[in-house]
Length: 260
Image (cartoon, rainbow, N blue to C red):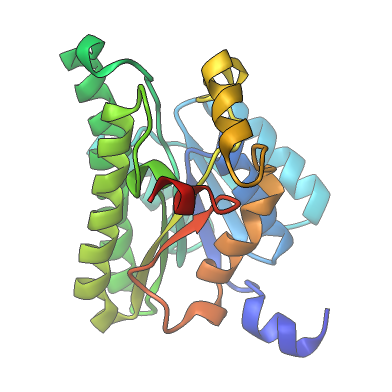
């Protein structure tokens, strides 16, 4: 890679924290951030998974990694995770705010427990992590990049997705609100809106008749590969996006255009 490209997209000297790093998009992002030169903090409730992944990534890239327990539904847990990150590697300057759950259901069959659990993780959990991250960046005085994982279902809707889509629409608006307030401190906040990528939270749906029918009707006729999300994340994490904030970027093979 040329010095020019490295200067724009390289992450050497950066500390990145990934919330929800135990599987799926989060684990893919953690690997990519380390390969791009960042020291990486892997946070999740399933500490056995992030500890194993931390070792795997360090062996693969030779970079510094740290596994921490991180439950986005608990402010105490979030604050402790950032404190451990600061002590071990330094204040995170990149935060991939990625933890999320999905409970697909028909709107008339949704329960209050489904609603509360989804909102507390997908929306309030991202708010907790974003606010704690911004306070740490402000104290550090170097700014940084917060990347929220939203969804194309935050831009459009589909069947059996009322609660999830509502939570992700909230993430999109929260991203924009954070961006306009925190830009003055060089804290950028953007959202990635993935289309359908097969992960633990949606594999059952994508394998169902309804899921297969939906994919066949999409412009790409397929689900995305997790590696296809990485370039957008690295761009938003890197100096290349120094004047990019408040964006909700679909990575979806034009699926959201079809939803619009």
